[in-house]
Amino acid sequence: MQTREVNFDGLVGPTHNYAGLSPGNLLSTRHARDIAHPRAAARQGLAKMRRVADLGIPQGLLPPHPRPHLDVLRELGFTGSVPEMLAEVQRSDPALLSACCSASAMWTANAATVSPSSDSATNRVQITPANLSTLFHRSIEVSWTTHVLRSIFADTSRFTVHDPLAGCAALADEGAANHTRLSCGHAGPGVEFFVYGRIGLAGGGEVDEAIGGSRRFQGRQTREASEAIARLHGLDPERVVLACQNPDAIDAGVFHNDVIAVGNEHVLLYHEDAYLDTDRVLGELRTKLAACPGSEAFLPLCVQREELSLEDASDCYLFNSQLLSLPGEPGSMLLLVPTDCEENPRARRVLERIEGEDNPIVRVEYVDVRQSMRNGGGPACLRLRVQLTDDELASVEKGVMLDDAKFSELEAWVDRNYREDLAPTDLADPELSTEVERALTELSELIGIPLDVPTGT
Ligand code: SUG
Image (tube, rainbow, N blue to C red; front, side, top):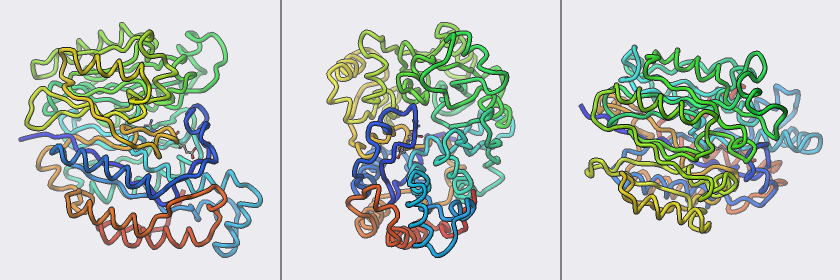
């Protein structure tokens, strides 16, 4: 039976805006309070999905969340009608209003961690929604994400959608952005590579020792969260590798591992300064992958700091690319990178070098996701990878799987429902809430998932 990678992209929501909500994510900070273009953002996301689907790779979507998150506002003591609540929160705490309006659920690499059935002792696909407890605006995504994932992966004989880990600092979990599965082909067991940015319990542990003092930014993913997910997913410890992010990288704006590395099958493209203990990490990946079925030896592709600095990497997001196995071209991969790399001469040179060398990356293609990029979300952030056998794919909720007709319907839906421009002050406009509600009601019909359930925290 064939096993394939399916990408579930986050459909950008109608409240897409720039609020500077993510310390450590330098692009988000840089673009705070810019005018956003929700319609263009959603169209860019759909165009990327279409490009991947055109390659013959199955493409799904995860719907936007209802925003503003009115239930959270009520839980925080705001009362009255929707217009009254929005006016009051804008007057008393505009940052809270931005947080409750964020369309951040578009970055579905943070929606969950997924292990294919072949990696798990349970023989079922394992999915743990991420608690996203580091940042308030992201933490309020979790209950809705869990609802959506349970609707899409509803067949409990094939999928287990766990509860998210407890939402506390020690168990902070940011999902697949810090998780890479390596294998010798998508079928058969592979090696799951978990990367954390800090130790949750007992201080900083090895991270503190390595950095000897306080730093500019704190890592988001904890080792405890990664270890818990590996246990919950029933993974064989012989096929799990853990690594600590280099704190220098975090300080340079690498808030997730997927801003500094991308892997697919037996290939890992990474930056020289991505990890604390690179030789040990690469050695362990090599040994553990060698014990998996298949004949491909681990292939690390290093980008040196002399060719591309950490600052360049977190600016143009070269590593936040999709490394895709090309259907019908065994052993060949395509690297789908943000157009921002085209504008950075050093990044362009690195990409030309990689494309020209003898390795599986036979093609580099650029994709315009600038609206998302300005909030620190590149092509890889926008998708959740799920490896599925044919039978598993057949039992996924059909409405979220995209074909030509569905793409056209979604494009028309965006054009009908999304504003062209959105300024921070527009977030309190009660008309915007009404527009989102109408848009989600229509989308619910389109994809067959109820999008009108109450949104708890
Ligand atoms: O969590 N940006 C997101 C970007 C997430 C990118 N995901 C991955 N690397 N996988 C974040 O920092 C910014 C929102 C704002 O500032 O308006 C934001 O949430």
